[in-house]
Image 1 (cartoon, rainbow, N blue to C red):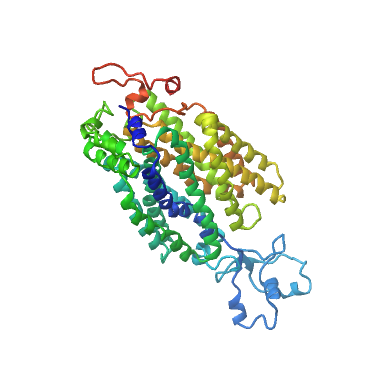
Image 2: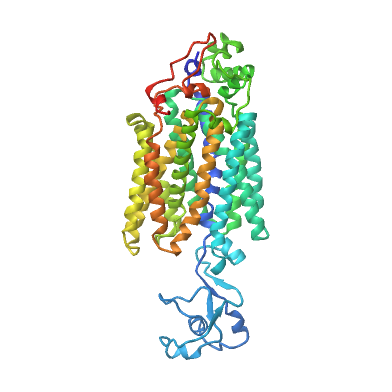
Length: 545
């Protein structure tokens, strides 16, 4: 008996599955907000050297604020005060002829900076003066966070494959919430950076565990719907983040506000079931029968599990059941598994670096940051709903490849649009963000279908590791615009176009049973009598090789 057949008998998308989906939907709220928190707390507001000490010495007399700035700080090309330099001494002659700029000595800011607080009350930059030569440290906090996410993905992927999905999900909830809240009260930048690393490390377990749990509990027909809903939870959270950040302009309280919802997730965790697939694959058939019975009762199919004995579940997976532990090394031990890991890893890395490269650039188009972030999130709604129809119409592989190609084209077009055409550039960027959202929603579902049950959590952890590597590099790529204004766009568009070719090499999974063992992937699975099982060795599976 295949697990999908049993799942269909007890209703593969009944009230039980909907409960799990809703719980995991809510549980991902804080996670998504933390991923893009840097867009608001790491903003560098307009600033100039603090000259209040000169006023205290009575040098300015009755001069107005504008006159004080004129004689103290050199003007930039656009007429605004320079951000990082001031005159070595006041230039009063500029009051009569401000256009006259003889060679006047300038020095770096001597007594800190004065910040424009009209948009943000407090950010990391204003808290610890991360401006001028230290301005890159604002982006560095995002990179540090995602380095933590990267290692956390590998760690939680491995631990949840060993100890189960449910217990590690609770660990992720508790530790992620704790580190997130404590980071809001950091007394130094180093303390904040360290706590952000551990926040990312611990909170990432939510996404890789919840996504796998959702897929492992639903029938084949409903996997794409679950994938879309799962992905929309991210969109919902980011739209809310824009509104929360608009209302809370202080970085400390904003961090607290997005961490607290995890308390709800911790409470609802008690109703989250363990993966029956994982339990069977690890020889824990009694526990698997317990959860399947709960599922059947809730779905009003109690009679199915009454006639099903725990020992019958042992026949679902006929190889490697409970007699060995799997590790990340099993992703590369066999040829088809190795090729699959390579292709999915490259695709995840590319999708992540491109999607977040666009998402982190909310201030690069000259429009309101909160509105841009909200529009970036809103465009994901139709983009992800479109997935539901595309996955059946064209399949996973073509959808992934084509939309990755469209992302690359959108980024390429923006390279040739003048920077003063902010509205046009923003529209193209929003379309690119929508295309990338379709790619992200597809690859998460796609990968969970490609990997066998015994390695699914390891596979998702490995892919998430590479994705977060890409995300951690995205802020650094945006810094390259200081060298050439279009350099980051050239790099991101090139990655997207190459990733489209890689994604097209993956096998199709539309309408296929989830593979249970490595032998299913390699096409060498045998039944108890030693006969080769061919039911999974379809044309699409052969493509892995």
